[in-house]
Image 1 (tube, rainbow, N blue to C red):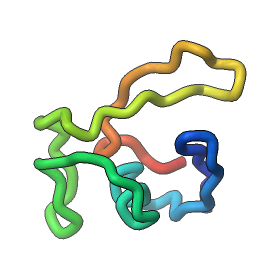
Image 2 (image 1 turned 30 degrees about the vertical axis):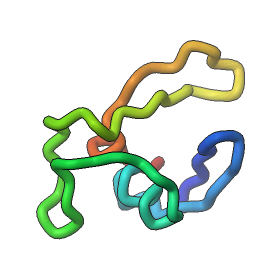
Image 3 (image 1 turned 120 degrees about the vertical axis):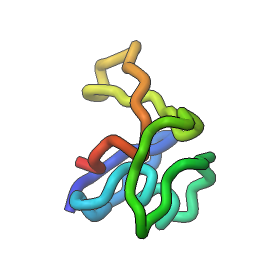
Length: 72
């Protein structure tokens, strides 16, 4: 299990899944087009872009594609 924080709320999620998959499983509304649970990730459409922060002190973060990012 891994812990992620989305919009200030902490969740325990399956670390073997990608970030998009766990967000959808939690009922979070994250847009996507090219990902399918049976076929995997492509990362081409860029609709699932999210800002990832290294820790609580990181104020800049960086963009990642949720379908390509492990939920760890």
